Amino acid sequence: MGAILRIEANAFPKTPYDPVTFLYFVSAYPDNFRVYIAGHEVVGYVIFYPDGHIVSVAVHARYRRSGIGTELVGEVLKRTRGDAIVEVRVSNDVARAFYSHLGFVMQRIIPEYYGDEDAVVMINPFSKEKGFTEKGLRSKLSFTKKV
Ligand SMILES: CC(C)(COP(=O)(O)OP(=O)(O)OC[C@H]1O[C@@H](n2cnc3c(N)ncnc32)[C@H](O)[C@@H]1OP(=O)(O)O)[C@@H](O)C(=O)NCCC(=O)NCCS
Image 1 (cartoon, protein in one colour):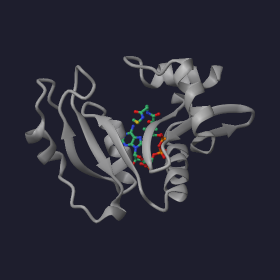
Image 2: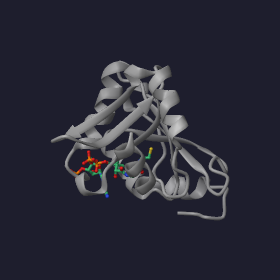
Image 3: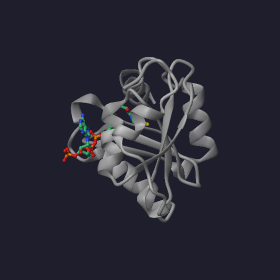
Image 4: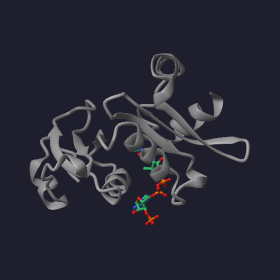
């Protein structure tokens, strides 16, 4: 748990989940809380609901860009037969690039989802829904903090 909390704090400095939230997900959805272990260390995790709604995915900063995030989201897609949906802070360029790389498309904006920022909802490519582009994203934002 310590390792997960450290990854969380580093990955989401503004709004990290607290230990109670993690304990809730472990007990409520034990099969949907997957961790990635390198050596003896937990270096990444993903939490998702059974319907494929991704709650959180994060990889230790030192281990990024080596395919771990891809493997973790791959676990989600495997267990949901390809269904997945996730909200991403519009300012989180890395997450948008990451999910786009995996074939997710931007579906809609949820204004001020994070209080101080809009969320862009991204869905997996198997839904057959047509997403919008990065240019389209900019025109859809409601919050002042535009990307
Ligand atoms: C998003 C995150 C989970 C990606 O994990 P990762 O293990 O580094 O991802 P991968 O190595 O599988 O990357 C797959 C692809 O995503 C894209 N990508 C990942 N990080 C990127 C970056 N910093 N800049 C641009 N593209 C990026 C690339 O296309 C990459 O493929 P490549 O390395 O062959 O170019 C990780 O950066 C992270 O923990 N970020 C902080 C937490 C967060 O924002 N989570 C997502 C919101 S729920």
